[in-house]
Length: 85
Image 1 (cartoon, rainbow, N blue to C red):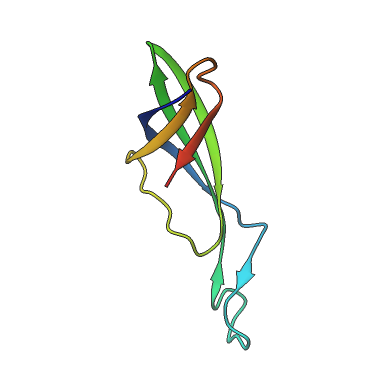
Image 2 (cartoon, rainbow, N blue to C red):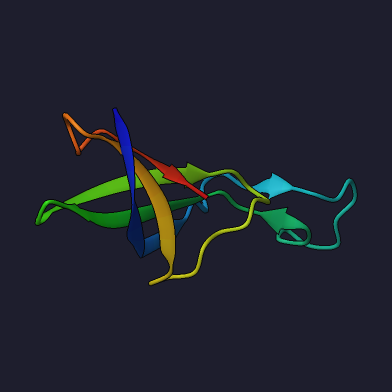
């Protein structure tokens, strides 16, 4: 059975090694460049703290640092979770 809780975004990393160009013709190297992100979320279940990471595609909105996101986890194994944005 799945349950849900709120988790807090504790880290955001921009993946600079994977640049996505949004313009067909650019004036500079970073003109129109967007990057994917990796967020790390901390959540608590029955007093135990767990951490989970999620990769966010380039161009999708990234939650702010210290903001709350919904986490769906397995009741039998709370470390097995899914971050919902």
